[in-house]
Image 1 (cartoon, chains in turn blue, brown):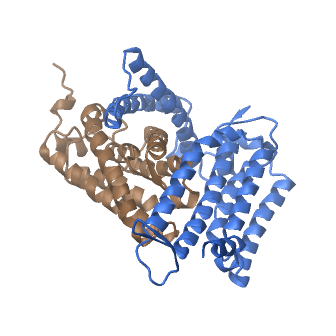
Image 2: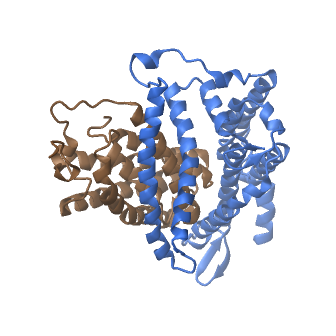
Image 3: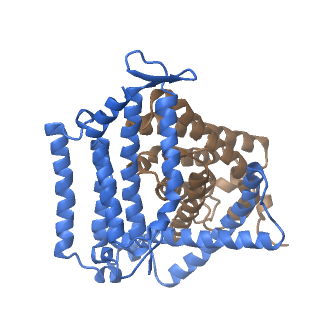
Length: 286
Length: 210
């Protein structure tokens, strides 16, 4: 199994045949798709495609459970924002009224549009995080020729996040070993006690920064001055080659985006008025 | 008796002024500290984003503010840089879309920059020795969070069409309260507990970059 940024994926997963740059390109471009699509059925289709890609990539779908509360919370916020706090709008079509709240068709429609716009964006991010390893992100950044210092900081930040999590567990277990138990305590109490974790976390990181620096200096690393201008051998990149199917995937993603823009602004496709789902829902509610 | 000045003897002015004979330059340690701050912020910020979500990366209690503001006070531009970058990652893990996170950058930049700037501009003591230190830091926290709270819902979330005008106050107060309350809980304690040590480390930044 390979540890990705969000979970584990089998080493034999077909996703590893694809160059990391293609995955980053996919994230950057496909995240834009829902911004130009208002008809929710198209965004649902995009979500299905993303789930299919995750399944093909053999992503452990259980890791996605943490996003269920996120999806529910976002849905609730959108409902509160669009439907319950919609105010009074005589220009809109009233479909229901309860407890002094007026429910308008236009607000229900907009809530659905927004929710199904945001979900595919989240799915795209989750697909990237659950299929990319730390090294993949570094390779993708180096492929687009980002300066060494940028990729190095990024790599170290990802590594240190793992270390901070480990430190957090150590501090927590040390407190528990001394009899600290927050079970059944109020949220305010837990928040107050969270400070007890923050101080050692910061202190450990400060100490570690000196250890890291000494190790880097001892190995001749320099990010400024003459020494930083020496051309570096990039061993990681030698393990990856940009194959013909990577070029095909990149072209497909680019062409899809251009086609989407062309159809959206040239022919008014993917608009609310053309939405089969919304028209069907309107007929039911009105 | 040692001729070396102890941390308790250093005045607030001396903390921020480069002393005669003192050499300060950008070094590997600053790059390392930036990376580590991004790492801490990633974890701490994601905790806040997942535990107390309001939606679209806005939280009722955003613990990441401590890393954002304290890191910038201690490490100047490097802390500001880290404070601007790490929310991008913590938001991503918490399920905020890529481009929404990217659009939050100006808010996070100001939230990190302002406390760092007031400490340097008014020569405040990061060990919080006087009421003035507390007061100005508190004001900086309020103003910077107010900017973030206005920028993010009004410009970003409204711009992306994610909110209606009627629901904007919920998000403005959510962002503002979530940051200020978390800042009150963590910032003062962290500065008080660790500043005396940090100002003596080579990683501490007196000006903006060294």
